[in-house]
Image (cartoon, rainbow, N blue to C red):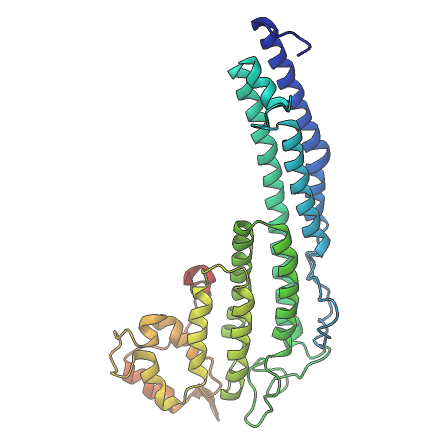
Length: 365
């Protein structure tokens, strides 16, 4: 306004206002908001402690933050609010009588200056969004590392504090190699119980900071990360008894439940896992019917071969504790395994290297 309202004055006003607005976007972004967001991601405790987590906990106490404290999400929400407030007060699009940038440039009639100012505005938000996404990915990586810390280090370590150790013997077989006669009083393995408790607490913080769309995307990504920690460990290092299968089934249900907290529907990987776990609860005589259906047809839609896949079904079945027996010559396949594979006319994928990439969550969605 101070430069006049005529055509020449209007153009001058537009150029000055645009230059000031661009300078303010750069200053508020580069000197203030951007460094704060970058610092948030950099300060996360990406590496978990070297000692196993305490598996005994009181649900009335605060959950472990898994390296991502509540203040991280609160800070992100504050920064997002600050950016929106900056835009409302300075740009103020469609706010009649505001005398802010948008209305002033409209009044000058300078389309060139308006276009330049819009570019500055979009660049400000784009760069802030990029840095915010980087910080959120850093949080995702941190949570993934702590998931592994709780499930693997905590669930398997002899020195883990608290919780019954489920190994059937001195450290072999994993947490689901539970011998017959073992008590099933605890609904979940201690590590999964702790992990789901921590993730539910984490979800509350994430939910308060992100939009529904961003929340669904983040939690779906975390769901897949969780699956990609749990399933390879199961297939490469654990064996499952019929008793342990009960705990495993409960654990899968608990993990699936926490993975679905955002309400997203992209959880085929967990649905398939629920079906595959039933292979450990079924007696050998009924496995053929489960794999190919009651008619014995490998192409039947009723069997796991068709619904989940032949390779997945056979690899999961190979983790049964009774799949192999000890002999004087070393471990050998149980007679029922040899008979079943011959009857189905299939080779055992467990005889070679397992293609672990085939079991990634991305392959199941």
